[in-house]
Length: 409
Image (cartoon, rainbow, N blue to C red; front, side):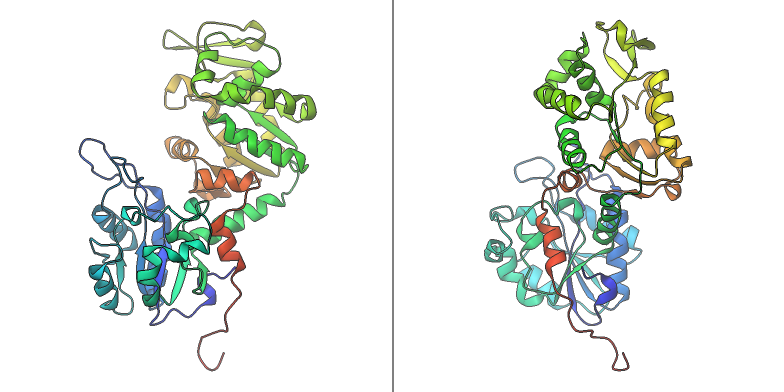
C-alpha cells in the first residue's frame, strides 16, 4: 500500500476521493458538518502543502433522495477545516470542470460537484468495468495520481472509488490509518473482547460468526438489540421488547444467534439484568424476571459490573454500538460505563458506528486515550465480516512506483 509518504506530488494533478457525506436538514437543505470532513481535511491539506494540484471527488446522499444535493456548502466546510481556500465548480466532469482543473496552480484545491449526480456513478460492478464510466472517460487524461481516502465508501465498486485504477493509486491518511488500525485488530493481543450494541443485529452477527470461527474472539459482550436477541435465544421471553426486535428485523437473526450460542456459548455474554422504561424512569430487573411489558433500554448494574471487569482485563477491545438508549440520561449508564473503562484501560481499542462516535463525544471521552475511532459505517462492518472491499483491494494491489524525489535520493 502506497501512502502520501511514497509519492512526489509536486506539480502533479492529484485526484483525491474523500467522503464528505453529511447530515442534511430535510426542510432547509442546510448541511451539518460531519467528523469525516475534519478527518479528510488532513489529507487534502497535506497534498496541497506537497505542491499538488488537488482535485477533490466526493458524494452527498443517493440519487433520488432529498439529501442528494450540490456540494457548494461542503466546499466552505472543507475550507474551514483545511484552513486554505477550496474552490468549487458546479460541474462533475463536463467542460466547466475540465477548465477548472486545467487552471489549477500548484498547491490549489478544487472540489468538484456531487459525483452521484452522474447517472452511471453506481452502474458498474467491477474495478475494470468502471473505466467505462463518464467520470473516468472524461477526467482520466487530467489525472496524474489517484488518492483514495474514503475507506467509508471503499465497499462500493463505483467509478469515483475504483475507476481510476490505471493511474498510480495512493492511500490517503484516513484510509491509511483505518487499515493500519484494522490490521492490528486482525492480529490482536489477547485476550480480545468485542462489544456489540446498537440496533443493527445482522451486522454484529456477521462479525461474530467470522471472528469466532477464526478463534480471534475471547469475549463477546452483547447489549442493545443484540443483547435482547441473545436473551431470547437463551430461552427466555422478552415481552414488550419483542415487537422492537421485529421492527428492527433482528428477529430474523434468532436462529443464527441460537446456533452461535450453542457452538460458542462460553465466549458469548448477554445481560443478566436490564433497565426498562417504567413511565419514563429507569427500573432494573434481572432477566430471570422477564418477560415484562416495558421496553428494555439499557443493561443493568450487575451486567455493567460483569462487562467492565472483562474489559479491564482485555488487551484488545472493539466496540460497535451503544449499550442502550444513551441519548436519555436515565438509560445512559451502560454506555457511559463501558466507554469509561475502555478509556482508562491500556488495551488497544477500536470504535465503529455513528452512534458510538456520538456517545464518545456526549460523554466527553478523551479520544487521545483510545486506540482508533473509525469514521466508517457499513464498510467497517463488511471488512470485519471478512468481505473484500473493492477500494481496499485497489490500494493494496498497486505496485510501488520508482521514487520520484530529488536526484540525491
